[in-house]
Image (cartoon, rainbow, N blue to C red):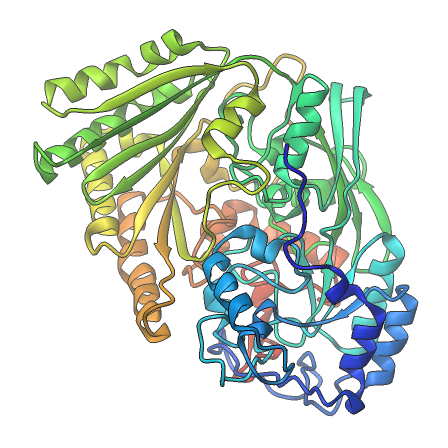
Length: 601
């Protein structure tokens, strides 16, 4: 595996000299807070009920930040957006060649991965400092956090919590910046940057009252690709994301975490054995199904960024072995669009038979094209994969639809993953997009009338050409492996009744005005999402891959668990130190017209 090396030198951010120069007025660099995003949830103000932002009278002074920097061993980082090289003011580091390179790679995860304050959500970036605005436009912080702590241990977190509580500063948790809902940033925020917590420990004989077997402890900063390699080297596989740069212990697993292996082993949250977490009160605790069990339950599927700052998780390992795979594609070029969507209906009707035997499918739907990007069939060879898909292939032939199909087999899960989702370490996926999603329930595809309604809604998604669908067909209610009891957790109950999680993807186009992209966001919020919900009544939405403007998000993201989750939130964070967009408890707050987080009236 290629070594992961940061494209931007960390010394640029972590140097104490750089930090002090940014604090010093003598340096001549004053970073404007910049414009705020649209108010959400109501109106606040610069009063005691609001978190402070730069420019407020209560905002901490330079000496106070310097004291915090000393407390955390010089690891406090003053925010410096990566696109400063694309703007003359205020840093005076404009570099045309470097800016062109940044433009080329702006939608790549590695561009944001190693920067302590960057994140990959264009809406929340708000054009305050990106590589596509004119060089004469100043680089301002806007919705970026003001400072970040490079977390190396418990004491760093405790110091940050104490400072934020005393100084009335917003707190944020950022790991990799994979974030569609703006949870990894916030105007005037102090961020806990957990990316460098890289512990990996394998225990082949983990023992507890609910599980005996191999396990792996992963620091919060360990990426999926790193975990896959470590597990493979020891003869195992581990449940993680399809993007290799997602941190397993972060919001991924805390929000549920779907995986190529989920039809066999469950969601990532179903595999967690222990959470190591620092609560907002500053206490380091270990949460398991039998110890601090309410916190374990909430962290395992109840969403990230709100109950505490996770240092590590311990999760199950599974024996490695062969994995069958395949690619399949067809389009409407010969038979027409109606016949194409008829085949899509047939595909969904047949999904239960495919996923119920432990297989997971990743597929894409465009207006007139179907692409089976990956099938993950543990224990099957190429012949077995062909047999698995034979009924659908026969259906395509009957409909007169030509297709391409290529089955294969890999010796290990890592080999399979690298073939379909490599190359490691960064993978193939862009990250700049508008996002929504819907869980398709089993009953909605097995009933012909309901299936037709689902297909009609999917056509609505792709019709304009602004959006496509990336779906993951998974059986998350599969019977756990022998001896692998599955403790209760806070995963949205809609997952257990679903056959496919379909993500609505709208690639962000930096060549058109931002206002045009906001029009597309309006299409997603007010046209596409209602159509999907109408076709799947009573289902829900995966909270990690969703639209931050989702209506009734408490029910759509958390289902019947929300009230209990909110009680746990209040138990561990009674003062509301941790806030994240659409996280449990965020409905107690609003964002005012200047970007402050304020208590809801």
